[in-house]
Image 1: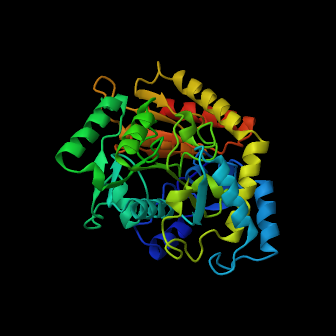
Image 2: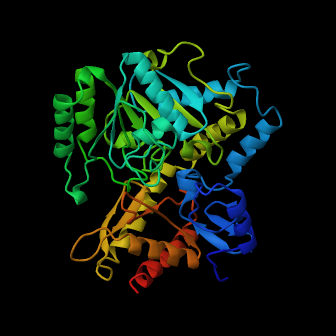
Image 3: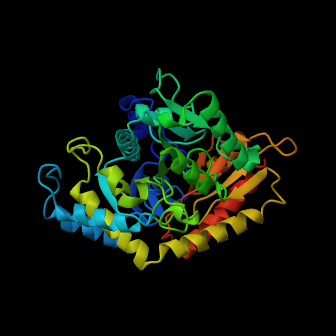
Amino acid sequence: MTHSPITDAALSDRRTAAIARGVGVTTQVYADRAENAEIWDKTGARYIDFAAGIAVVNTGHRHPKVIAAVKAQLDRFTHTCHQVVPYENYVTLAERLNDKVPGDFPKKTLFATTGAEAVENAVKIARHYTGRAAVIAFAGGFHGRTFMGMALTGKVQPYKAGFGPMMADVWHLPFPIALQGVTAEDSLAALDRLFKADLEPARVAAILIEPVQGEGGFYEVPAGFMASLRRVCDTHGIVLIADEVQTGFARTGKLFAMEHHGVAADITTMAKGLGGGLPISAVTGRAEIMDSPNPGGLGGTYAGNPLAIAAANAVLDVIEEEQLCDRAMRLGQRLKQRLAGMQEAVPQIADIRGPGFMNAVEFAVPGTGAPDAGFANRVREEALSRGLILLTCGVYGNVIRFLAPLTIPDAVFDEALEILEASVLAARG
């Protein structure tokens, strides 16, 4: 079937007329149904989904165990507000995350609804526990679209532009990216200069970092850098927060990306892959830190919705039973090998990277190394026309990230790799 960029022109017009312009869309594919790693649009055209709702359905669209868990909960109750009438599966999920999040110390958990909420709560808790205000984040990082989320995010377009003053006392460091000439030593030196020139360490509540930057371009923290940050935080009494919203739940070949670094954060934020398609986020951290705010200082009406909690418990079961961490490693290795096989024919490929199945390819102008966003977008559009949904990312928009469900059938994955190679070759013109 031919894949049109706009599957339903009338529906597209309705969307434009009805929905705020700021809610951007990557495709004009209007989903009608989905199964595992495939989506069918309103016209019946089939697409292979290498976006997974931005790393949300790591366990695939409509995984039978997740659907069964949600249906069972639906037959019991859908909402009471845990702060009014609590329920057991909320407690069970908290116990499981306390056990699974890296760190050999007592932990406690709270649930919210979005990744931005998780980050906001982590900052609130760190500030309350330390009695300090300042927060340090990294250039290129993405932490949400709320005001604190925007302030922490290290990317102006489209997230900060035109929204006025950001939250105060948020500071940014360069993220160590070898391809851009920024080493781990450079980032640590910048932190030392910040402490000497602008910000007393005793005023810093938290340092917030993604183990692999998401929107920023899928750059992984280099070996040893997390341990260095851990030492800085321990020296100055600063809370280390790991934003695992996009990296979590088997995506990188470990349940959490921090496991690759042998370092435990004081607080871990998560969302996306936790709910298997239902909205839920969580904050897990050292018990004494998490217990700092007074009762009522944390929570939310929909926080830890029973249906999403049921889905999340099923997601953890599926990851373990289907050994999805191991599968992520195998899928990522195959994808990176396929991309590497194109490099000789496609000099625009500047880098292939990413742990597990959190992979990316970066495009640059041959000879100059300048970011080539146009080439990345041509690959994305060509792939879409052939039935493969891809996402771009990066501060310069020159990176394609790959986030297919970890449950993607081998035959569908092989088909997607064929489409990807054809699309990259076609993008050369």
